[in-house]
Length: 118
Image: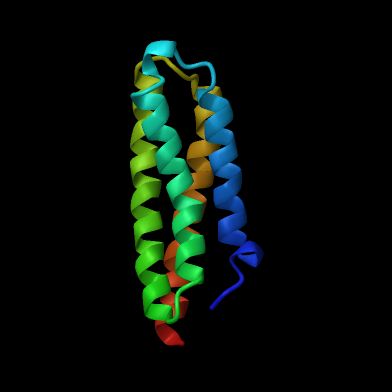
């Protein structure tokens, strides 16, 4: 078992989630139950799966949940790209979040590799 609160990847994923909430707070009301909700759920899924995996009994289980978190990262990227294409968010607002997501996907792959060695 790992202390998820101490994992840098979990901390960064929490920052991404917070940034996604802030970035989507001005989306149109008609998107509340559509893109806004989906984007936020994808963002929440990343640190949630990292935490759940960290609380599992084996590194293999942890690795499985990191894979799910990585899938959520790519889902979130897609929703952010779509938000930009629909002019719901500016490039200036979305680019830092995209860069953060790309960074944690790299961290995720590295962590998964290290778990395979242990």
